[in-house]
Length: 291
Image 1 (cartoon, rainbow, N blue to C red):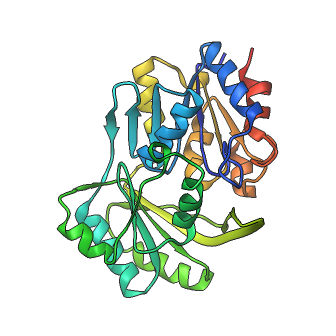
Image 2: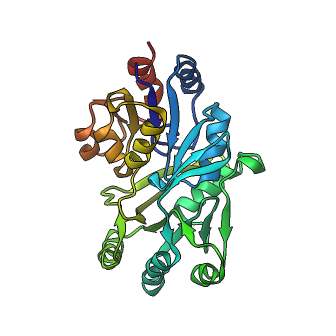
């Protein structure tokens, strides 16, 4: 039996509209009832990940910021962290500002941005369907760099950089790689999400990367939980779809890859299930987790 199941959110547990199917919800309940520890492992901030975890009854631990944080939901406290500091964030922000490229900054409890675009627009649309306490907190400010400089906060989860032009995006990545002690996620494909505009579906497509402190990834956070819960590697199953899931898919006892993943991620997994719009997580739990 797998004692620990870690599940990515966007592109994995959530469909293109940011929803979890009823079948998947029931499968999660059955997995937890049999004694499997289920942990959501996301790039999102604590507030967004926690609201979904509580809604699903996954109320022990969560991983946010791509592994920058392990959070104890019941105790309402961070029990493991690997933050970016203010100096690192300002260096990243300065390069983005000088090159007029869109970016947003994640803290433990909010996303700081200057406008509702790309990933932040998707969170905003997602929020419209939720009650206040379950929303991703979005803080729109006129000048992100000034706001960070003047704010007392010293700890940050990650920075996301987005653009529709691959050429512009690649040129910024080259400049960002000159900054010391950070990790830059190497995402080869565009993010593709859907939002509702009236009765029509509108696609949000963009190139992006996520920047964290050095050696931050979901697997290192999972290793912390394994030690805390006395769980062996072969007792861990992980489900994901993207480059930020790579380490946990590679290292888990069972690495499960979504059908919507790019070919590189599919190659490193042990098994491939249906895509996130066809209940791939439901399929994975029924095939490999429930006993």
